[in-house]
Length: 328
Image (cartoon, rainbow, N blue to C red; front, side, top):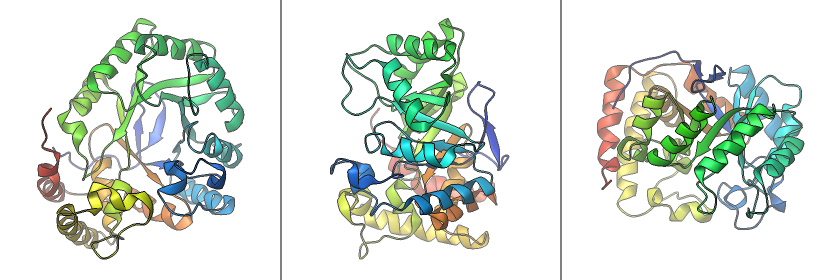
């Protein structure tokens, strides 16, 4: 599954007409995560939180490089990330995405109330992309989509997306929004060279068929594709227990990193930039990479400065495709 070199700078978000950069910023760990629950991945997975100044610098570097899409969620640190995003993006020209719900959602906590609270934390009158964070067994997709459509009609959101939806669930959401005359803009799912499930579970095919942007979270596989970690240098926190950093997967990672380094040297860059670029050159895919400081933001943005050729895309495809084989 390869795509040739494409426009390195921008795509349209689904059928919305909203122009976004081919690379986005993931702001899950922005804000003072010391106030977040101890079990929150935003607090415990990616090392110490950075300061407001470091996060501001990450944003400025990203904007200067042409990155104009930023993704957060109400439940990241129980609103902490949204508050910091609101502080840092006030008055700036970029596309902000967030997600519903907030914390321990219940039937009584309606989407309109949660949306108003996100707007307040983000210091915005309208959210560019509002996403359902995951499917809710206690509320139908049709009901959720109609609530989202109502919010579009009220001028509180520009575009509607989902996250962690299967192909079938996404089709249901798409059909219900279409009944209201609206497109489904996006489906945000895990996708990387080490996690190619969207290619085999029907999600990527459905996105392309319906003209829905696939927003790829964890595009660097929780840091496994950065080259920082190995059998002798495993990450701290609960990330060390992820499959990428255990057992025989470390040997697979070692071989892949050698290939990423080899390709990166041809372009004067490193493994993480090649891994991001591979995603960027898949049709209709937008990777969102975390950036806690200016250095990380600058490294991520380097993926916008080059293109992989067909041979390089094929080599990466062959090196990682076996990892995507699983029973449907």
